[in-house]
Amino acid sequence: MSYTNVVPNRELRLNATVAYGGDCSCLANERRQGCLKRRARTFSQASVCQEWYSMFTLLTVENSAVIVHGPVGCVSSAATMNIFNRLGQAARGTSPIRSKRWFSTELGENEVIHGGEDKLRGTVRAVDERYHPEVIFVFTSCVSGIIGDAVRDVINALQSEVGARIVLSECEGFKSSVWATGFDAAFHGITQALLEPRNERIANLVNVISPLTVGRLDEVEIERLFESLGLRANFIPCYASLEGIRKTVQASATVSTCMTYGDYFARQLEEHYGVPFTRDVMPLGIESTDAWLRNLAPLVGKEQQVERLIAAEHARIKPTVESLRSKLAGKRVFVSAGQARAMTMSALATELGFELVGTTVYHYDEVIVESIARLSRSLGNFPINVANVQPFEQANLLRRLKPDLYLSDEMTTGWAAKQGIPTMMIYDYGMTYLGYEGVLKIGERILHSISNPSFSLGLQRHKSLPYRESWYSADPFKHVALDGVE
Image (cartoon, rainbow, N blue to C red; front, side, top):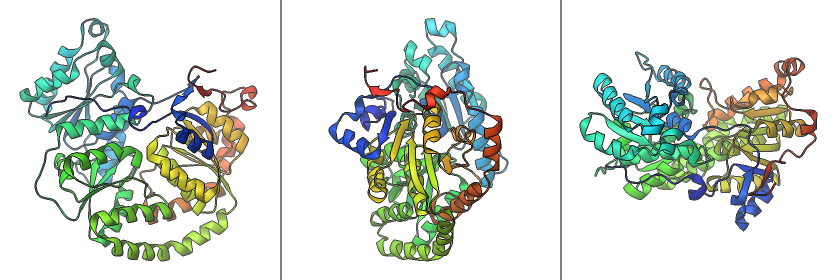
């Protein structure tokens, strides 16, 4: 299939924004009034590139190679992702463990002036000839986008010359402030280059779209739940084979372990191949896992079996959950993560007895509207910050709110720890997070973090954040404003 169009960015497709500060009720009101899209950030300390998240989505696919059409620095993050790649192989029993092959077209001054299309052609041909991968993933960059290389035309022409399937992800960072658009660009490439209609439907096969941050132990928990329902999980795209990806069109349904991550691909599978999907919630926490299973049930005709499974799992975990609640009741928590995990982790924290004092989501779009509504109905109003990794805002909020625990990913835990706040990272390949078993494991880890704050307290004594005291007394959302208004 030829590449003929490009995925729309999330600002257009899902009314996304990366700048908001206030109460969740105000966020809901602004969305209803249609003025949320006018929010902007007048100062930005940090962010993440779309290309990073496109590579994050596709780099671990089996027997594949990665080419970044850009300056050599744009491929540097592949070294970090290769750590995930090797850990994931080890967890899945792959032998021998192999590092990913990644390459750069190394665009420089000459290509910026004269164009880099010849370098792209040469790199694709060389990788195909030397390594014979099944799939070559090509990622664009800000440089290739700015100079206007006709990457789609080059890829379309090259496909007949090489043995590998070429998958193009057009993920130039400047096209969107919402880095989750990089997920969509990667899945758009898969849809256009790898999928074809297949007549036979596999009745018990369910696509599970999972990001790289969902580890093997989480997959084991999903497989355990599915086995009791007579279902089989097709985990895609991370660590998947080419055949596993192509088989997605034959599944009876599609679910996602992260609705932000899987939204675009699930919609494409339904629109083009008739595979129904559900993506309203992430299976993290008791209520969210219940909803995840119940949303899947009618798609696969398993309503009664799901209710029996939920009842059995509730009975199994109830004594441990009640014990955890008795020890954690009244503690205050702040949650910061991608929008899907932040919403479900906030709900789980309250299930364990915490008071939620605030939540940060890295962007906000229509995918989590219902999740915020459910949280608001159960908890009332709570502060919410929409920020694509802005540590200066987070430091201000944490100084004001003084939570007993900070739940976040690896990007921001250090900022809380330096303020003496116990932290727990919510991505860990060595731990189960999802499903009912995840509730118990998270609860145990949280209890340990709360009971042993010595590391954070010691760090606070010897380290400080790089902000003046005048900033801590300022409005934390001082730099969030309407477009063109200071």
